[in-house]
Length: 233
Image 1 (cartoon, rainbow, N blue to C red):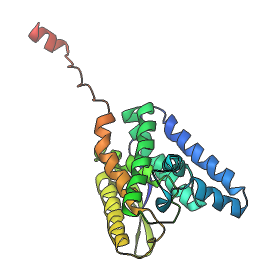
Image 2 (image 1 turned 90 degrees about the vertical axis):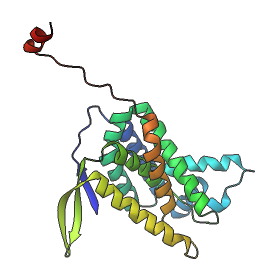
Image 3 (image 1 turned 180 degrees about the horizontal axis):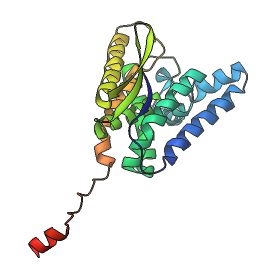
Image 4 (image 1 turned 120 degrees about the vertical axis):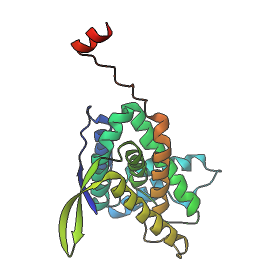
């Protein structure tokens, strides 16, 4: 399934979402202009490699943040940024710009820690915003379960556009990540090169933490018409 758009429209401009997308695109374009050897060297330097993390090297833990803004290819970048574009604006609108930035970065860090905890011996550098975006998806799942997502679904070799409730779309997504994550635990080496547990960890964190950062909505003020005023006056 591939999301095309959701049915909600934010009330404010998603400036943080747009800025995060711009930074990720700029980082990828800058790295893509480098020679292949230098690209790989920077990926190893700023990507998250679980087997290389050590408490003796505190600076190495900064890779939990830098790895969020790096991507390995155009498809990797576009799929991540498109998902953030669709789901990030409404979450940002709901919790506020500053909170959303902190929430996004925290989701990425927690996602990275989940990946390290479940695959501590992995020597493959992990890069990409998918863990942080998974946190946004978890928040969307909690805040807007009744929203609908226009989705491309391949049926009998033909693509179909179907509106799916957000809680079903995201529920299917996290179940697919969980099944792949469980399979990866029994696999030798790095399973598919995808940080499944980063996705799972980010989603769970986002779903649990969003209630702590989302401001409570005030109840709508009572509205009286002229008859009510006369009746109760």
